[in-house]
Picture 1 (cartoon, one colour):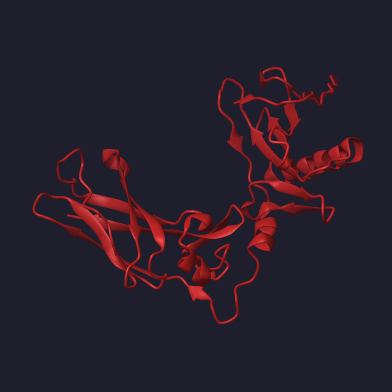
Picture 2 (cartoon, one colour):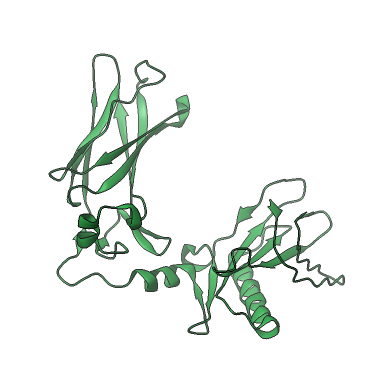
Length: 260
């Protein structure tokens, strides 16, 4: 990953460890550097981003402790004027890509809130943004999903849900064994949904096991009538078919169907 920043925050230590903050972009060399740190605020209006890349696998707990320490160092010496959002990655020698390190509870980042002066895990931060469901308006999301096959061998996905009418969803149909992937945007009507017919370049789909994923966009892109029911941040959506992401509750339902 090539890291690019707009201004410089640099110090370099060459004892047992190497620190490097890059102003105009440089490739991390895991052969030479034990870890690299970048502290940047490209967008100016958003949070300052703290990125750490290790040159070997590290236990998530240790990576989290190290990241917290680096946030505290930034707070102490940089006097931040924005929130600080911190990510940790590792890149093995002789590999060109990085893998994100998950912190406690599957959190993808840590964030220092300037307003509260607290360092939070992303899961706790997002939960605070989402807030509690409106009393009496909770929706324990459920799906009944089936498939249909026509004479041409095309497949469509249909079913029922307790989500509100006019809510926009995306259906994805995948079968890795034949490298098949298809998507269709759907809208709930009378608590039901049906996709377009899926095919493989104009021909029917091969028999096999297919994964069906149903997801929703950010609530910002839902109709106002839907947001009135599910909440501005999806806070009224509950259950196993719901995931918290981007400070919102979003639909994330997966099932597998065998198609003959």
